[in-house]
Every structure is written in C-alpha cells, then in structure tokens.
Image (cartoon, rainbow, N blue to C red; front, side):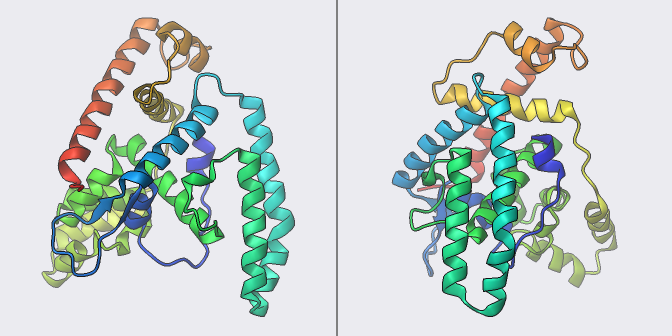
Length: 286
C-alpha cells in the first residue's frame, strides 16, 4: 500500500476532474443537464449493488485476513511485465493515428492485467476498459487512500465541503493531489480569492501546493484498519485483535503492547463511523 501511494505515476491525456473520478469509483453518476435538485451526483442503486459486491470480492482477496502476500507480489510483478512488453507497440499505434488498433491493443493488455490481478470487471464500466478509464480509477483510489491517511477524512466529504466554499477542505484536497487545484470543486473558491487578492489564503494555497506527503508505515496501518472495518461491515469475519497485532506488527515496532494496539483500533473504529456518518450528511443521494 505504501509503494502504491508513494510512487508517482503520470496520467495519460484524459479529460475530467479528479472529484468526478472519485465519485464514479463509488458508483455515482453525473446529474442530468438542467437538473436543479440539490446534490452533485446521483447514485444508481443497481450499479451500487454490483459495485459493492465486486469491491467486497476484490478487497477481501487483496486485503482480507486470508490474503496471499506472495501471490500478490507475483501478480504485481507480472502486470508490470505485461505493460512493459505492450507499451511501445500501443504508443506506436497511437502516434501513427491508428486509434482503432490502439484501442484494441489497450483493451487486450488491460484485460490480461485484470485477469492477472483477479479483478472483477464489474469494478469498471461494462462497456469495456480503456487505459484512460483504468488511470482515472487508479488516481481516484490513490487520492482516497491519501485522504484517509493524511487527513483522517473521507474524500467525498472533503469534495462536498470544498464545493460549498470551505477553504480548509480546498487546502486539504490540494495537499492530497495537485490535480484538485484545477478541479471544479475547488476552482471557484480559488478564483474568488484571486479576484479579491486574498493574500493570506493564496499563501496557504502556495504552501498546500508545495506540500509533499510523507506517509509512514503507521499511516498505512491505520488505512488498513479502515479496510478491515469495511470488510467487517460487508459481513466478512475478522481475526482477533491478538492475531491482528501479531500479523501486522510482529516485531512490536509500532505498538509496545496489545493494549496500545487495541486502543488504536478503537480510535479507528470511531473515526470510521464518523466518516461515514459525515458522508451521509454531506453527500445527498436520491
């Protein structure tokens, strides 16, 4: 998880806002043009059901108590090999303007990678998978993990608050991912500050842009607790606290005692409940 969050990977030329990609990754769809009802996005119940089932299957396989770490490492290595062997040919077709061949090769490569990762295709749109779509999903996932680790906040909540003009939410999102600087949920607040020559806020924004997140192992562990609690809410049984402590901190470098580990888990459980309660309050759905 730390490697996934720390390593910077550049996006292909894709359109859209990161906030929209994050909402899409949660099963939300854009509002119809001209719809005046409150709320930026609507939730498709059928899509949500499929997404939850697919997410539960994938999350439990990769992050559940019974995960096979060695198999995971092999799968990650194999996906890199697949992309390395296909990348030059895909890029050549794109540069030559043969977009149909480019899309075919990309779809084949992505399908092979998904198969290697044992990823349910229901996690993505049913009409096929493009490299742009995968890139959006990956960037949205990374931003979600960083929000949880850095700010102990759920990204949907920060996005909703930023869209209402909450400056602290804007700064938190920019710290999470610099793409938020031009995102539709943050841009109006930033533009308003520029028009008013609000130097105090612009200095805060400058510091947020220069901020480089440094995630520690403890941060990754705390995000992992949220993942385990999510699995628990989906009906998956969790190991005992003693088993978790022995597995996650076998050298006792993060927690000196089972009591300390238990207290941290209890804090994470409270934060988990708060984040989802705030999401229900901040993000209206029909």
